[in-house]
Each structure stands twice: as structure tokens, then as C-alpha cells.
Image 1 (cartoon, one colour):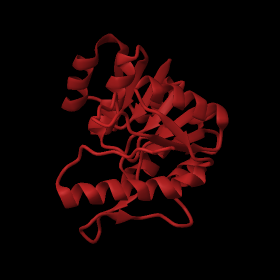
Image 2 (tube, one colour):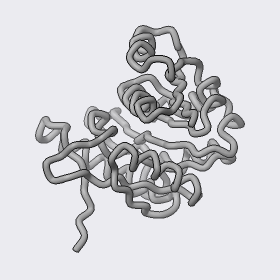
Image 3 (cartoon, helix red, strand yellow):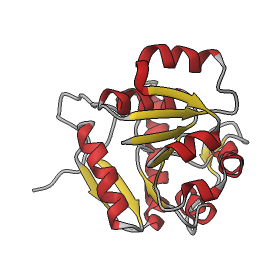
Image 4 (cartoon, helix red, strand yellow):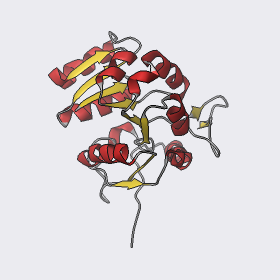
Length: 213
């Protein structure tokens, strides 16, 4: 499968390398594909990795991944061209974080979400919220003493969620589907809980697990 990853920060590079390790071809997209971190990533992943602009990454992928900060994601989508995402599953990893008061908070919530915003910006795509409530160090093959944590996802298209679930399970995640893309209103505050716990304890190796009896 071909996967286009928009974003060359820690999350984009980690997920891109993880997809390459599964045997997929990955094009990572950036405003500046020639920057050093991209060159280092290309050396790490080998022949199945490539780099380009946001538009080139979006056009390349059978699936696209949005791994961009909230403040830059709408512009990145415009630079890529919404039409390049049409008919594709789009994994939205973003959280609408607002640091204007110093401590992180949510810029969107309660009656809307980043996931729903992305779906509106990409009306022809099938957006699936995933990966947003765990740190990048544990996104691929999460290892915890109590066993694998749970990945919660949501989205409007059952076929897209099935495709994303397959990728998640290949990374070692048990997956729980909580419904339509409006479920992002729950998953993005869940990410805030992950962030707040991290700041209070100064630890970032934690995740959530759904327990059943």
C-alpha cells in the first residue's frame, strides 16, 4: 500500500517509519522536503521511503495521514489541495491544542472537534481519528507491562475504519470503534487527559486501556 504522511515532526516520522517497517511505501510531505530531519528520515527508512511537498504526499497515498499541529493543519490541507484526498481514508492524528494562556487547552470542543473540522475541509475524504491520545514513542508496537493499551477510533465510513483498524492491529493495537467522526469530541479531550497527567508527573510513557469483564 502507498501511504502519504503530511507532517515531518516526531509523529509523522515515527508513523512513516512504522508503515515502512510493515512493507508499505511512504512519501512524507513537508513545506520544505529538503530539510535535515527529512534527509535523516530517508536514510533511516531506505528505498520504500520518499519525500515531497504536501501536495505530492497527498497525491501519492492510497491512505493519507495528517500529522500536523492544529495551527498549521488547515493551511497544509489547502496547500495539498483537498481534491487530492477525495475517495481516500485520511487518518487524523491532530489535537486542537491552544497554548495561548501558557498551559495547554483545547481550542475546539464540546460541540465541534478537530476531526469534524478536517472532515469538513476534506468533504470527499473518509476521515478517521486515531493515534491522537498516545505519545509518539508508543504509537508503533506499544509495549507495556499490563499488556497493549487500547486505540480508540472514530469516523463516518465503515470501510475506512476497517482499513485503519488493519494498520493499527499490525502495529499491535487492540482497536475500539466509538462511532462517527463526532466521537472526536471525546477522543480529543482524552488526549488532554493524557497531556495533563504527563505534565503533572513529568512522565510520558502512559496510555489508556479499556477493561472488560
